[in-house]
Figure: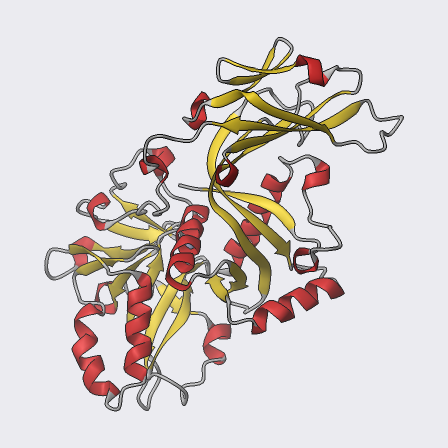
Length: 408
Ligand SMILES: [Zn+2]
């Protein structure tokens, strides 16, 4: 039996659930479609059970639109757009608060024994090698930390302020836990376990800005990116003072007190960065840039940072199993800028690069590639006609694809 492909999204701002379904063109959709028991039915087939959304559907508010203006004679199916009213929520949306979940905070780490490279398991920090028992501390917000760095640069005596700011820098035998990384003092690193990225380091201008620089570091044994090292230089070779190990690049033992399915992935940390940047700077447009190469991989326009989607995978392929998925997600418009790059893409990138309201987010190149691939998979969940923005009146998003990022 083939499934009825559908994709639905909650439109919180207008209290509605919008669904697109693809059905046989002979099917009398207007007559067959109904809302009962808080679910959307087509004849005797239950399409969407809205109880997972936690909001009641209004059986009296339903509109259907036949999306095929000029039905293709060879095509046996037709797309229908359905809007169903939802009743306003009486309870505060506590469960759907905009705050991103804290991912791997200090309290989840217990007494850690080892931090190792995610890719090759090479040890990077061993608690047993430290002189004193390791302490774990959550760091203040990433944006506050950035702000302090930025602020002291503009002071008349930045050295004095820097000296005063030192307590929040890495300290031996303390694991400082940021939102997306662990900050470790160089004394605690397993000797020669990481190495500066030569390409990135060669582009650093030491005569400019602060006398410490954050430079990409890679795993010595497998060359995979691990994070950023804080290098300091007076006259000689730069000296490594501390390192930020990105949480998605390393493993920590014993395994944090989370269930395996809660173990955050790179995409979860991306959500965290997007939400935090949106909150701190009211930024909704992001250039995703490779940390190693500086290349722009994609543009992301944060369209809705907290929505819910219900779908089956029928639009990906009609032979997919009939399983129905419900996710809390971010809706984004994105433009894949990896090769081959078109003239129009180049124009979009150029415009966003000079636009002060858009923000650069840097990730190791391998993760930028993974991000595009993940986004593309979500685009396929939509009916083909809804995957790409191509309305001539909306030039700023022309050729952007629609995608979703699952929220942790
Ligand atoms: Zn490695």
